[in-house]
Image 1 (cartoon, rainbow, N blue to C red):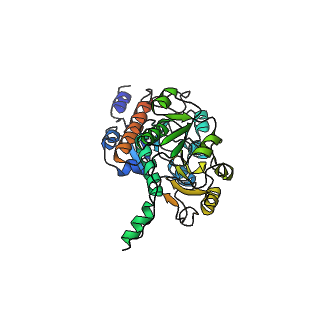
Image 2 (image 1 turned 45 degrees about the vertical axis):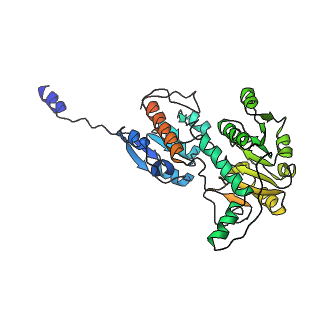
Image 3 (image 1 turned 30 degrees about the vertical axis):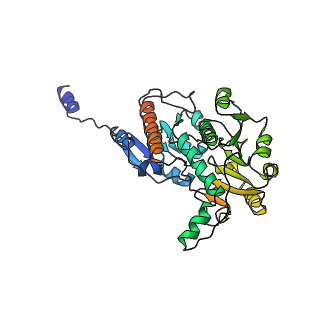
Length: 341
């Protein structure tokens, strides 16, 4: 017995650190406290450059305990391979339409997210797109860069009507800025905030059709759901004012690409300012990329230093709390209990 005890005492305990998959590029590329916070955990960090498609995501899961994701394709197939090793899925950002939340819930995987971190940044970007379209910004900068001095006449935003589809945090920030520009504001949201609307002179639309019919500009700030997919289509575009400008800093799939192209070519749509596309990154021949009345940015509306640090820090804090069995800051499927890893 003494020999057995001696043998046991000579064995060293080996502690294997948790392995965390990190794929969001803005998190990785932007300096800030989120890096220190993650490093202090002592976890092993596996880095990849997202957004990843299903095949690339499948290749990386299976032996990771936690996952800080951007807009990777996290399908049921991915989650089936990831479990039971995967304890927590922490989304960097607010949109979870690329995650099969239903399957994650079925498998007992908490899905965390970071609301309230990017509304200022996205609202500012919305006005960047609007001003670029209405002032012919790209035409003029291209002209002067090429040694020319060609000019087009733009339009003021003052007294124009902006229709805001979705008055969550981002939509509200757009309304605040629209009021500062002296614009008329009409909004539509299932969950209407009477106090905010009264304070910022936002008129409540009776239906989406009211927004479509009355607006000079339409700004989309709703989640991607089965109900909102292709919300902007040939039928809704036909109800809009001729020459309407449409802004999209939400999800590319909310707009039917084929119908938008047709509307732009016919002149029914005067311009499309978008930060998102139905395929990201898009193929070189994507039909929206070459049209002169389109201003498209590469899904960077929330990518400012301040916003990235807020999102990244919150996503790390969420992960740490959940991995320790504590309540995270925000969880998409709160019915799934968090358990210490």
